[in-house]
Image (cartoon, rainbow over all chains, first blue to last red; front, top):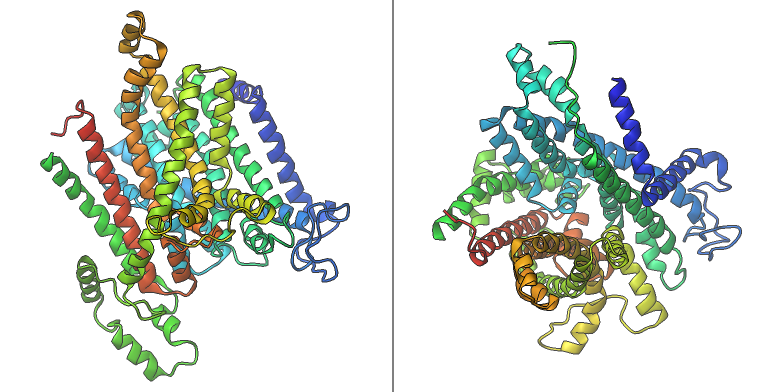
Length: 291
Length: 315
C-alpha cells in the first residue's frame, strides 16, 4: 500500500509542476472555498431583491453589478458555483456508478454480455448528449434531480468505454488469470484485482467529465430547461442577462467568464493528469495476500 | 462495397429499434400523460376520455407501438398538439435554415482550423505550436452561448455592424443579407469546431510526418512545402474526413444552443419550443429525425472513408 501512496504523491507532484494545472487547481479551490463559505463572507445573499438598485453597472458596492431584480450578481455567481459543482459531482457519480461496472463486465466477460452492454452504450452514444438530456427533462419535468440524472446518463458511455478498454488490456495479464486459476470468484477478480489497476484513466475521466457536466448543466439552464429558478445557476444568469444586453452589457459577461474559467481549469487539470499518468512507469500492482 | 453498406445498415437496426422504442415510450413516462397536458386542468372526465380515444391511447400498448412505428416508417410522425400541423411539415420547414447554418459553421471551422493545425504541426513544441494549442483549448472551452453573447455585445450592441438576432435568409435568394444574418452564429459555432478540427488534424499530421515516405521525400531534396502539401496533407486529411462528417452530423441537431443565442429559426429552436409547450408528437418527431440524420451521416462518413482510402478492406 505504501508503494502506491508514494506513486500517488509523485504523480501529484508532477501535476503541480505544470504551471497551468497549478493555476487551475488554485482557481478551483478558491471557488470551492468561496462557494462553501458564501453565507459568511459575502455581504449579500443570492436571493434578496432590491428594486432601487436594479441593473446596476459593476462598482465598489456590487463588484459584478446587480440583476433585473436588484440582486447582487457576484453573490449569485458564487452561489451559482454551488449549483454547478453539485450538479457536476452528482452527475459524474451517477455516470461512474453505472458506466464503470458496465465497462468492467463487458470487458471482463466478453462474448454476448460484451455485445449486449456495448450495444446499449452505442444507443446512448448515438444521440448528442444535450439532446438526450433535453428529452429526458421533457419527460421528467424541470427539477434539480432531472438535470442531475440527465447530465449523469450522458456520461455513462465514456466511463463504460474507457473502463472496458482498460479491462481488455488487463484481462489476460498473469495476475488476473492467477486469481482465476486459484478459484477467486469473478466479482472478486473484477472489483478487487482488475479495477484497482484500471483506475488511472477513470480518474482522468472523472475530471474531464466534470467539466462536460458543468457545461451541459449551464447549457440546459441557458435553454430554459435546467434547474428551475430562483436557484442561482450560471446558465440561467446568462439566459436572463441576454435580455439586457443593451441596458446592462456586463450582466452576461461575468457569469460566462466564471463558467469558462471553470471549464478550462477542469479541462487543463484533466489533460495534465492524463499526461502524467501516461508517462508514469506502469508498475503493475499485483494484489498481495488474499487468493 | 454494397455488401459493406448493407452490413452496416443491418448493424444499425438494433440501435434504431431500441432508440425509437425509447423515444416512443417517452409518452408513457410522462407524469399525468400527454392527455392531461392537452386538455388542461379543468377538463371533465368525458373530455379526457374523448381525447384518449382520439389519440388511440385506449388501445393495448403493443398495438399502439406497432401503429406508431408503422406510420413513423412511412414518414408520418403525427400532428403537432400545439398547432395541429403534421410534425413532418414543421420539421421540413426548419431544415434549410439548420442546414445553411451547419454548412457555414463547418466552413468557418475549416478556414480557422486547418491553418492552425498545419502551422503548429510544422514545428511541434515551438512557441507557435504552444500558442496555437492554447487557441484550440480556448475554442473548445469557451461555451458557445457565452461566445455568442460576447460577439453580439461587440458587433451588434457596441459597433452596430450586424443584427443581434439572426433570421433565416436563403443564401441563394439574397446572398449579402444571408451572410449578414449568418456571420455571427456561424462564427460562434465555427470557432468551436475549429478547435476540434485543429487538434485532430495536428495529431494526424504529426503521425504522418514520422512516416518513412516523408524521410524519403526529404532526402531526395523535395522542398518542405511540397513534402507537406503533396505528401503529408493528402494522407493526414483522410482520417480528418471522418471528424468533419461527424461534426456536420452533430450540427444538424446540435446547433440548439447557438440557435437559442441568436433566436435563429432552425430545428433546435423548434425542439426547444416543443419541449416548453410539452408538444410530445413534435418532440418525438424532432428527436427521431435528428437521430436518423446523425446515424446516417455517420454511416455515410464510414463509407466515404473506406472509399477514399484504398487501404481499408471492405470485406
